[in-house]
Image 1: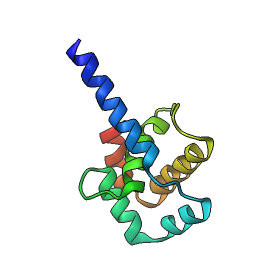
Image 2: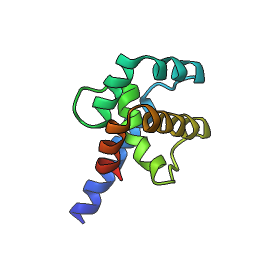
Image 3: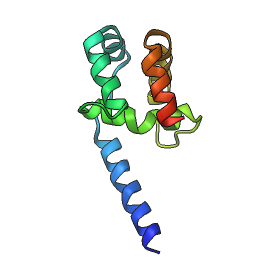
Image 4: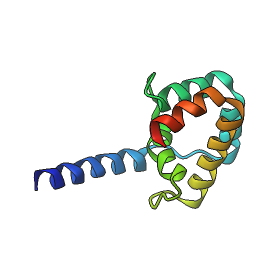
Length: 105
């Protein structure tokens, strides 16, 4: 029973953090992908190697779900943007991609 309550609490906390994070437009996403320092910051966040801003926390929470093929709480735009980001990281940051796959895969 305690485990069930703990799981419900964690899910609730994650859900409220995810829903309160800012959403990105497609143009903002393209700017972020083109900015190497911002990408490095988000990658360190995703790998638990650095601090996260609200967008990084949201990505770190939702990306594993999208990576596994199901993100019921993601909008269609978020799913598309996360897939775009993951494909970009896979192509342009292969070492970091390998670490992310080991961590979340």
